[in-house]
Image (cartoon, rainbow, N blue to C red; front, side):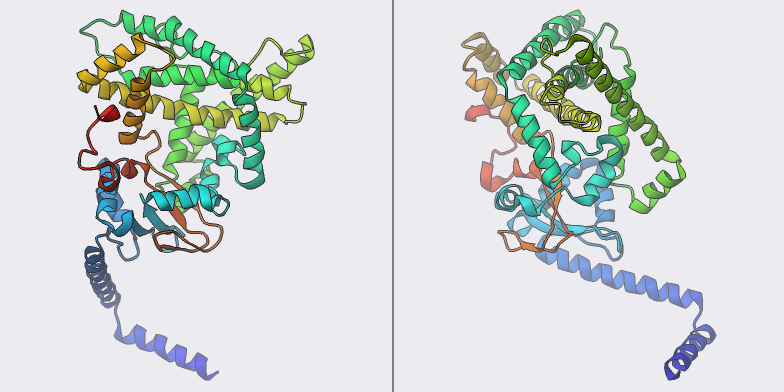
Length: 422
């Protein structure tokens, strides 16, 4: 009773003697003082500033146009190549960003079981990937990995993939580039994206979607897949209460995402159904070597939903990563004629070796990794090798872009494109 009276008295005094403007001024002063203190602390540590309430969001948006270079520079200044981060208050987003090889090995190898993708990641990719391998954790991930390893490393699938690439290169890619005149501008990234999409769909589903066909047509499945991917990735920068509200109401980008993801699933479901019908009609799929067909006849133990999600994940993994890697590779060759000459000489020589070509590709991916940043979520409290404490539910963001540009690892000429030091 006494406590209730005390609270009532306090509320009455606030109403009588304090105006809204006073509260606003006090909040502004508190924010400013806290920001100055955080800035001083970040400056003394050499780490990016964490703003009051907003965390690292203002800093990220200020550097959004050059976020990878900013991240690499920030990590280079940070002790041990690691700094803490925090999202908005009540957003549940915190952890560390690191480019330390020891930390990355700890997360992806030594303590792999403690660092799954986590619900934060899976929730955002649920519409597109379902329970596919790139959106699964634990036993579900392990089962799909075993299935993938068994089929993808088989001599039959490797021969099929090799043949599919050769047919695409000689049947579509080379003729397309041959028709391009000296004065014609070509969006090479778009061409290579079409190439990798055709290739990965042939390998995964055994179908020709025709992205590299004459005239470079717009393919509905490819367009739906691209939009679904773009809108899914947008969820990682849009606050959850915004995109989840849009999803519940069926408006904005979430409405378009639902439509695009549905088109992707319908294409995959239809392909799975047609392949099963082919198996029933012919009695076997011995003439097919694509991933879907091999999984269907693998003891008949996989459900249609499993096959759909697995193959969609396979396409996502191979489409953008391969096209990005190839685009940067050809960009670097075009800007380094001496490397291009050595690559051509290597190709014209013993095709069983091509060591310099291999060195040029890996050097290209060192400077421009296909996946420049990724993260894992801790299941239980842990301590990274550099001493950074990680609480359960926090994320470890590993910055592969910065790792490939670290002066301690690669030396003072780390930003130069020098395959085999040449």
